[in-house]
Image (tube, rainbow, N blue to C red):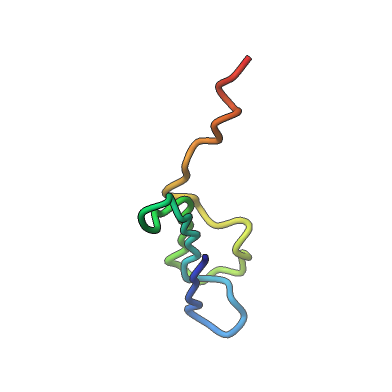
Length: 59
């Protein structure tokens, strides 16, 4: 599940969050936010929260 909000119609500020169901409820898995509207798209916003990829630490 995801949610987002735009500060302006062109979508260059706001936030984007993704939630993941863990079997009992939803937990935040990714959160990015851009507080200043400056022309950057959501893919370039700073990520403030991210769940680690379980496979990333495996050899």
